[in-house]
Image (cartoon, rainbow, N blue to C red; front, side, top):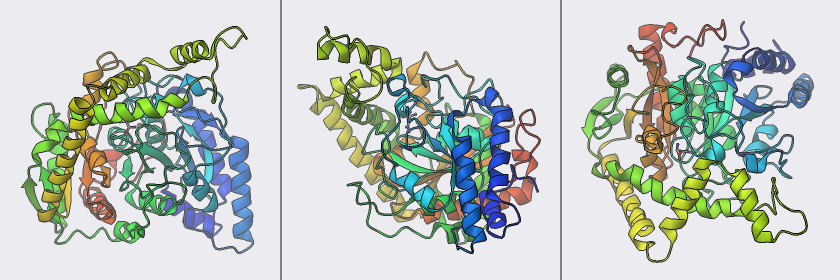
Length: 503
Ligand code: GLN
C-alpha cells in the first residue's frame, strides 16, 4: 500500500480500522515534503511536531473506540490565508511576515474537530492576487508536472502540494478562480462551493463579496468528504448560509448523470483556447454522454464582460480590505523611531510591505471608488454583475449544470506573464463568472493536452446551493475517463515521485 498515492477516503478507512496509524501516514507525507519541497516550494510553514502530536492523539482516540469522521487522521495542508494559531499566517505577503494569529478560522476549527492532521501552510500569491503564485513575497511555487511552469494561483501551493503527493488534501480559497485554476493546471480536483456555504471567519479577506474557501484533492470523493467537514452555517460570518449543506458525498459516490442536462458555454471556446484543452473538454463531454447525460450548447452573452467587471469590483473591495495593514495593528512596522508621524510609519510600512500587484489593485480600487468615478466604474460593474447572474439563471432554466474549460491554456512557464498583468488576468476568463454570481463551480482533471503533456481542467458550474451536482458530474467523469484511458494518462511527474496517482 503506497501511503502517498492513496486517496484520503482510503487512508481514512485504513486509519479507522487501525490497519495503518495516522502517525505512519503523517510521517510518510512529512518525508515526501522533505524529499520534494525544495524543488516545489508548496509550503511556507510546516508543523512536523504539531502534526505528529495531532496524529498520535487521533490514533489514541480511535484505539479507545471513539467513532470519528471518515477523514480522521488524514493529513491536510492549509492555504496561508487561513488563520491557524499554531503557525504564522502571512497571506503570501511580507507585510504579515511572522504574524501568528490569536485565533483559528472556522474552517481550521472544523478540520481539527474532525480529527484531520494539519501539516502546514501553503504558498499563495500575495493576498491571493494572482494566477501563478509569482506575486508571493516568499518566491513562487513550481508545478510538479514541470517545475519550469506555474502551478496556477493564487492557491498554487495547495494544488502543487496535492499533485506532488505531499498531502492528500488541501484547503484553498477562490475569489476569481484560485481553487479551480490551480487545480486545473496541476491535474487536481478543486471545488469552490456556493458563496456562503463555507465560513469566511478567520480567512484573510481579499474581496469579501466573492471570497469562498473550498477543497483541493486528487479524487472527487475526497473533495466531497472535505466539503462536508468544512461547510455549514457559522454565526461568526454574516454572509454564512443557514440552509442545509447538500449531500455531496452521496453524489460523489454515485456519480449518476443519467438524464442530467449539461450546457456547454459557447463563449468559452475558440480564439485563445489551446487545441489540447478544447480536445480534452470535447472528450469529457463525450464521456458524460456515454454515462447518460444530455448535452446542449448554451449562450451566456454577458460572460465576455466578466473579466472587466471583476477587475472593478474585486479591486474596490481589495482597497477597502487592505486598509487595515497600516503598520500599526499587524505584522511589519517600519520607521517607528519615536520621531516619525503615524502617517509616515504607515506610508513606509505599506511602501515596503506590499508587493507590486497588491499596490496596483489598491490603486485601481481606490480610483474606481473615488467621487466622480464611482457610478461610471463601480456602479456599472455592479449592474453587469446582475446581468451575468441573469445569464446563469436563464441557462439554468434549460440545463442542470454548465460546463467549460477551467482555463484557456495549460500551465504556462514561470516568468512568462508576470510582467503583463492583462495576460495574467486572462487565465481566469472562465472561472470568474461563477464568483460574480455566487454559485458553486469546480475543476476536474480531464486528461493531458497532447501538445505539451500537461493537465487540462474541466469546469462544472451548478445553480446556487446545488453543489451536489458538481460532484455528480465530477465522479461520472472520473469513472468514465479512468475506464477509457486507465490512470496512466494522469500519472504523476516521475521525476518527483515514483507514485502513480489514481484519480
Ligand atoms: N487570479 C485571480 C486574481 O488574481 C483570482 C484570485 C483568487 O481567486 N483569489 O484576482
